[in-house]
Image 1: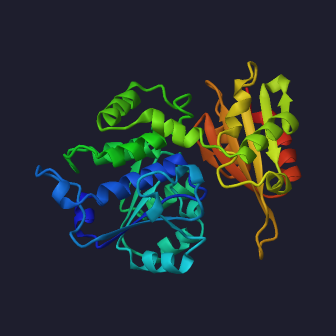
Image 2 (image 1 turned 90 degrees about the vertical axis):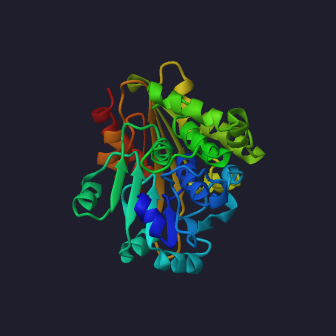
Image 3 (image 1 turned 90 degrees about the horizontal axis):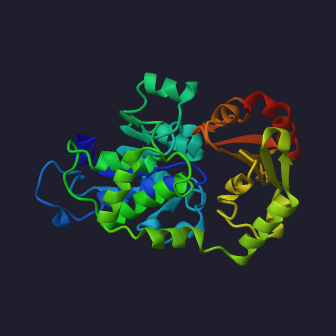
Amino acid sequence: MKELLQHAQHIVILTHMAPDGDAMGSALALYNRLNVPEAQLNAAEPQCKRAESASVSVIVPNAFPAFFNWMPGAERVHVYEKESAVCDDILAAADLFLCTDFNDPKRIGPVGEKMLANPCPKILIDHHLMDEGAKGLVDEGFWTEVHSHPEASSACEIVYKVLTSERLTSERLTEEVATCIYTGLMTDTGNFSYNSTRAELYDIIAALLRAGVQKDAIYNAVFNQYSEHRVRLTGYALYRKMRIYPEHHLALITLSADELEQYHYQVGDTEGLVNMPLQISDVYYSVFMREERAKPGTPKSRIRISFRSQGDRPVNIWAHEVFHGGGHANASGGELFGTIGQAVRLFEQTYKKYLK
């Protein structure tokens, strides 16, 4: 990786569709690290540096939530849906891809097709379980270098380890880089309420705090900047749309495209909603379904599905086998092309098989 960075002239950082805090954090941590002026770096070797004249770009497939706009470097991110022609030129010119928080090009939509068409080196940094398709890419040598650790809390945890590896860098992290990493750690663990029991994670947090991270300010920027419409949508979802299946300690929330429009939905307005039913004392599993209206030229809506659970109650196998997704044992995702009704029927036909 060090050698590739030192010789690349056009580095492109990619992350998945519907970017969350870990996607934005890992991508922007790399972006900010690679954009540190060489004059600010310590003289010690080895250094994580790019070629002197290299450009560094971040491309996301579609819009990220507005409550990540404050992150260092967010204003420089290219959104493919909004500027596809510019992004196509950047992708075609790339001579090194850094891919974070996904392990299959299908997770980045049309950006993945452009990446596949470019034969340049590709480095993977991810923490999701690999399905057969993703394993096949590794076996075929699609990735030049792979940092895949499903036991990690987040892609940001792996980015931290990569950037602080003595083989790659000896400089201390800047506050900007540390802030991006902490944001991913915090959001991908539900503010350290799941996938966060390893002591090593808190050693990393301590190091980030020493680098200048203002953790309370980050929490406030992510979780305490809601619009009135978002708060009302949350109330509606919990009061009108939450179903409880008491015999299996399970909750389900569904929101159609019409319902989302009624509450002036913006990207990110349902972030964290799937976790709320777990506050009920005898609910251990929670599922949230959100409809994305079919776009022109596509016959079916996309139903985005989020899964959460507590303790030794995995949901990732259910998400993978039934809804073509996957993730961590306690936090997974999937999708279905069709209607909310079809998704609910499939949910009700299968949940007894996968829940304890």
